[in-house]
View 1 (cartoon, rainbow, N blue to C red):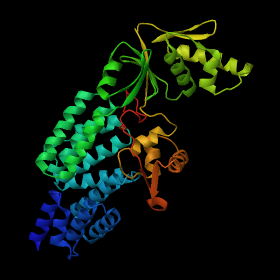
View 2 (cartoon, one colour; view 1 turned 30 degrees about the vertical axis):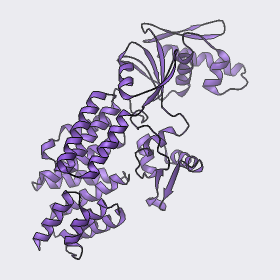
View 3 (cartoon, rainbow, N blue to C red; view 1 turned 120 degrees about the horizontal axis):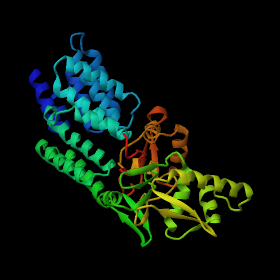
View 4 (cartoon, rainbow, N blue to C red; view 1 turned 120 degrees about the vertical axis):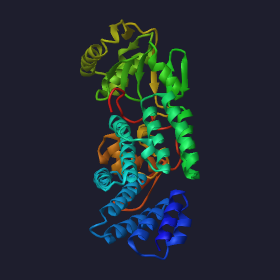
Length: 406
């Protein structure tokens, strides 16, 4: 009987869930239930997979803690794939500790890789990098090595490191080739397409054009003053002024940068920053206050000069000014960007990834559903959202991750 379990496990490792089920489909012992659960997960039957894994975990005896931990890791991976991120981190950590204590280094390493993948999904880049740094690629199961390099590529894309991302994707492709699993090769192909797709739109004095990741990397390394609407910062090379929590100041900075080297009238600034159709004395007083605050914030990079009609942005050492914006700008672009990976997300996971309230996400999803851009399936806590028309851009520049921190 153990030979059947071994044969099924080998089939799963090779990405052949149907072959695995042929060996164990009629068995109800805990090892077979666990393998059946993994097979169903590979086939996309997540609800049934979780049920089988939980039955298997309950069936293992007190002396089989490592086997139960493997079931927990598999269930946590299902939660990760289905974007149910609420409790999987704690489960992974506990399972990893048990596996390490029992000498199962391969599955412990796989659990650590899944932790890094979850951290990347919710934008905690520094922690994801540290999690990967604790891992040896050689300690991972062959199929997991592709995922390791995909996580490394995702971090590099968020950090705007095109060469590092390309190197990681090349290693992912080689790992997928060695594993011989077509689904892994397809995932690497999708990531490569994301790397080559437009990640931002440049608005400058000479016009507007789409930029790839390499172009963005070159721009922010230059001596251009960049008002970055993808991350809500102002920057010249390594000098970065965060404006993420100051939407009025950022709106003023963007308006001034788009008009550079010309000035911007007070009426235009009022409309851009406050959406004031008819400005009164209170609006004009507030504009003076906000311009003063912006002048103080931008002091390391530029000055703000008052003119006859309004205000003028005056860079200190930058030779040019540019505005970097998402490829598609609309009120719910960040939500669409996350859904662009083609996976099903829960509203709570979207809220966690974007750092906003669940109600804000619900309003955004309702608006997108009304516009025919997303669809929902399931009920209650099992409700998930997917993009109908996946936008042609990756999420790398649209998540609210500060460039200088994780």
